[in-house]
Length: 351
Image (cartoon, rainbow, N blue to C red; front, side):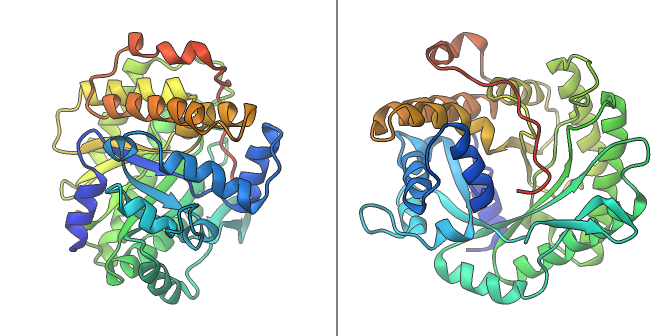
């Protein structure tokens, strides 16, 4: 399949992407938080429950996997990519190697993983992956982000994307301006604009086909420590303006990261963006915690009660499916009263 067609399948109307690519370390922290042992069996067990939830293929177009998961087999003997394919869900894979301190600016991080990437891409393609993810992070403070980190990460994202397209897969390009900090929404707008501008310049330099990528950016928000209230209508207007100004028209769509927003916030804000979308860009979701957190808490109550966990996950996926078309409404959130949804968790720098 041509990469342009894969990208459009990832962005299918009313569908989004489940980010289930937590590293073993990150997944262990998630399971520790709900007092479930982080064994390989439990990590796979939780993810398989999500992947086989009722109507999941109606709400989810793709799943980003971790190296451990893409090589595992499900309880029925299928490989995880085979399990997803049977539900018309594209398997994807996280291919970056995490972050490291930037030379000359140790408080900032660059993303590693280009060495040996071509070989790993061939392996992942043969395992069934048809798209990939690479995440770069930028923090906002008085002195950050520096131009050095903006340029360094943009170059790596572009080289990664070019290699992925050569391997006949679609690269998710994820430049994340972190929510951490006491900055206001205007500062987030300014920094995100600079980051996107540099990223697309480098993508063009590497001759990456814009029609064959999916952008995974942050929404434009006030910093988590600012004390300022995030108003969905303002978030939507600022986010749409930023993307209209900085994303080439050839890019087919955007799959937002949740970036520390709660489940309800991530759904609400996506819906507001789609309500005012006056572009040809498709706006959908690529959420991790904002799709899984409620399901994880339900699962921890009884890891053998598969149906209860799946009902929570299916509800959340359905809510985001509605938000991806601008048709979500608050009164559809009845199920949230049945479970405890945690307050927003600030994003970790290293996934």
